[in-house]
Image (tube, rainbow, N blue to C red):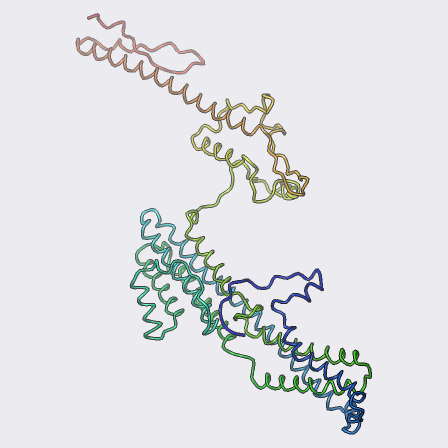
Amino acid sequence: SGGGCDDTAMIDYSESWLLLTVLHWKGSVFPRSCFFAVPAALLAAFLVQAEEITQSQFREELGLLEAHRSQLWLISLGVCHALLVFRINRAMERFWEGTGLLHQMRGEWFDAVSCCVTFSRGSRGPRYEDTMRFRHCIVRLMSLCHGSALEEIGGEEADFCETIDRMGLDSGTLGHLKDCQQVYKFNRVEVLLHMIQSLIAQNLENGVLKVQPPILSRVYQTLSRGFVNLLNAKKIADTRFPFPFAQLISGLLILHVVILPILISATVSEVWLASTLTFLPIFSMCCLNYIGVELENPFGRDANDLPLKHFQFEMNNCLLMLLHSSADHMPGVSKQRVIMNTDKIKEAMRDAPTGLVPGCLPEGKEEEDRIEDSLEGSGLGDSPEVVMLNEKGEDLKSGDESCAWVPAAVSEDGGLEEKLQPTTLLQGINQVVTALTGIRQAIEVQAEDVGRSIDAFLCLAVNLRKNEMTDDLFVEEELDEDGPVGFAWDCSALPEQ
């Protein structure tokens, strides 16, 4: 199995129809197995008809009719089967270990970058430009590191795996990477990992990473574990199935291709039956052998090998998520929909299959939440004058069931239709109108108070200019029992000018 990166994903197939599975040609080992099984079947048919065609008893003269009684044949057959089973077991272990190591490597390295992005969140406000430079730099370095790792385990003929804007790195970094690979013959993955660790340490000193050093050490540990997984994967790519075993299996298969037709023709006199009984054992043993060859190195170009370019695409997609504008979004609970009571939560969980689809907001609900949150933040969301109307214009009380969300209904085509009471829009409009009306009334009251204060100050100024007594300027109004306490200015005592 050669090295390289394949553009396509692994073979997608279904075993619902056995015949279609058998006829699936891509990735099949049937053609190569038939290359040995068909000649063996033809040889068996020829030996059965040989005496009638040549009019001679050469099989009896050569002792071929007595060959099936030999026990050496059974011993060699048992040895061949044992070797094939051993090779298949080892190949499957290497295949599953290889795909597990690639997933672990990607998970460890992505976790390290994700932690660094999270730790830099605290400095995004005061040092926005430095924070974004750090994030873009570490994402590009990690993408290049992951792609270089896949190319390394892919072999010398590996294709280039696409990375995230590697030309976005500064000229000094690109020149250093080029010299390390072409001049000094350093391992590019190791160079990139060292650069990532140095970048993290520098930004910790500069204050971009707002985290304590003991916590930051976890990032270095994940980077180290990812590199160890890479080395284990490279061990699989560099270490082939031992040659003595492969040589012995090949020799026994060739021996069976020659001897099995002789043994079958000595015991079976029908041409079609002899050909069939010869074809099936040879075909099955060759298939097992080629399956082992296919799976021993899972990092190649064959159809059954792991799609390295697909792994790189997934890694790039994860890293680009960290650069998205919403990467720093802080999650929370809805002030309108959240359920705090545990008993009610359990009840809602039981009703979930017939309710709203998990993870989806009903149409119009997101806009309603935005309006209600804005009103609550302004202190007007709890106004007692809010009146909610239904689609008929009737007043709805807070406990009315008609205000509740209706469960999801099943449409004719089997899908889910999210249905919402039309009172939602009316409720939102009523709340907005009530809030604006309250603001207008408050402004009018404040304007009247300001006008009265201005008049009082004018009266006081006139009185002071004439140097007259000001004790009688303030006259306390008679208070109602239930009325508010207030003061008014009496300007009647001021002399006319």
